[in-house]
Structure formats: structure tokens, C-alpha cells
Amino acid sequence: MAMTLGAIKRLELIKAHPEYRTKLWIIVNALQKGLREAGLDLGRTESPVTPVFFRCGLSQVTQLIYDLRENFGIFCSVVIYPVVPRDVVMLRLIPTSSHSLEDVDYTVKSFKELKRKIDNNLYPDEMKDFSK
Picture 1 (cartoon, rainbow, N blue to C red):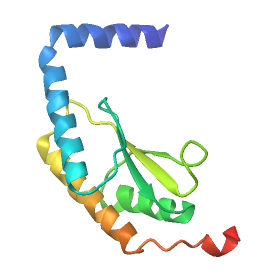
Picture 2 (tube, rainbow, N blue to C red):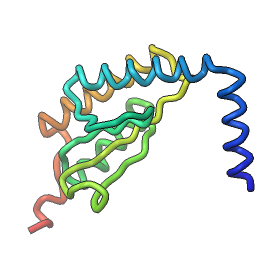
Picture 3 (cartoon, helix red, strand yellow):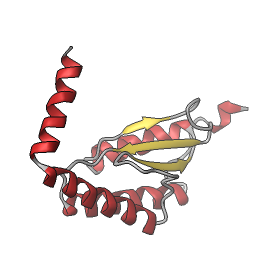
């Protein structure tokens, strides 16, 4: 029942404040464009939920997520095998209309740095020797 009431309330807010949806799509489009221009793989998405795919091992994912949260102050959901292939991690960003274009710029810069670290093997795969 609470989920239904929450959904109804969200629909009421969207009807009463169409500017929220407009701002959301400004933020989403800026985020997805910036991430793609930074060379990141977003796959195919047609919604505000923005997947970012990286090729790395499980221990690298752990280091990457720690870095993202502790050093960049960004929290996002993580999707690993078996939902995605073993050597892939999907980070799910969920922008909202309360985010700003400055938030988008910071996020793009942070993800660019994550990509640089992965590309330069700065998150060592500590579990690599155990996978044999």
C-alpha cells in the first residue's frame, strides 16, 4: 500500500510541476553526453538511469567502488556477474532533478579519473592469481 501511495504522490508532483521533468532531462542529457565524450561505455539507455560499464576483475571493482565513495564522494549501485559478464562491472547512476550541472561536471570528471586508473591498471587485480 505504501508503494502505491508513493507512486501516486510522484505522479501528482509530476503533473503539478512539469519543470521537474524538464530539469531532470537537462541533467540526464548533460551527464550521458559528458560521460560518452569522456570515452565511457554507457551501452544503450533511454532512461535517466545511466549505466557505466568497466572491464575489470572483482577485486578491482571493490577498490574502484571504495575510491568512488571515499575519495570522490559518489555513491552508486554496482552490478556484477552473473547479471553482467565476469570481467565487467556496471555502475548505475541515477540522476535527479535536484542535481545541478555542477554535479554533472564533477561526476564526469570523477568517472574520467576512474577510467584513467582502470586503463593504467592502478587498481591491481589482487584475486587474479586465485582464479586459475
